[in-house]
Image (cartoon, rainbow, N blue to C red; front, side):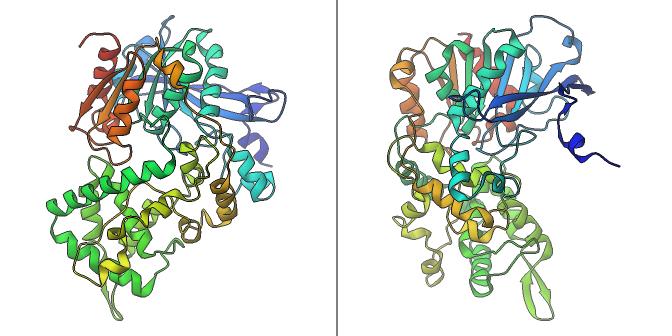
Length: 450
């Protein structure tokens, strides 16, 4: 009989299972670690972390290679599943032993989703559990596993987007663990409430939409036609997602990536098919939209996204939804009664998502509990950042749709010794799209080579 417990558990007879294998140009080793759920209660409940070590094939047995740990964007996404030396990884393994960490709750680490969270109890207990899935806990995870891998030596951290938020927390609380810090599209405001974040975001999103329509003017009418159809029919997609106009607008999240405008254009042109009953959303369009809008693969993004900005006694209280009301041009109902272009939205989480998405519906009350919390701890230490001694470099993408440029530059000025590279060559995904060049530039900045 197949042993499901043994298949799921990374431990065999109490021993840690470590697997090493090869891909083109690299050797990979899978690591599993046990860490406390609450680092302030080390004798309490524990969870598992998964991380993948990557080293160049010709350096696999070389002692003394420095380590670089990669902190993925999100929250809620596991580390990239690269094949060989894709994106920035090829540059990194030229001199580092790289650790691709699945942050707690993501990837192959102990999962947190609609299937597993009921093990915690009701919505209040689930929300209490999820308070341990922010940047502060992720950094303490890093510090817990670092001595086991490096022998206690500091390592370099590369933080993309939310991974950059984690990196700034790292600099605030455990700089002794860092040899250098590299940040791409992820310098957060040190003191902004979520409301401030979204008040800055909506005008940026509108600029991105205007740029998209300038590139693809035919999409103005296409977007209106799709929105009008959705408003009349409110279709349920083939995968069970309830498509509303607000959900359709949220496809604008694509516009934050380097290829996003082109991807959105190709998506819109494939929307309708002729049927005996008249025009309908094509199966191909529905499949693509479902995959883009569903949080089945990353539910933590929806659950703790706004909590990433919470660090005082003010609740987030569905900040993006409340602040959106201050920008009436995003009101699709009003737009469709007039002649203006439909505005897409961007990287934000709204309460209606927990009704529309089958992967989130069971977690609506849990999300409400998190949105109402008022006991968040500070994430950043301005005084310690002002006295920073760790070499730090940050790529700030000009008019980044996801992270406000002015917020980022203000934080850059608050971190002693931080060097910025402000560029409009890339969008928020620059470390993927131009990875070798971006990583090379950041390393050079930390070493005073440019």
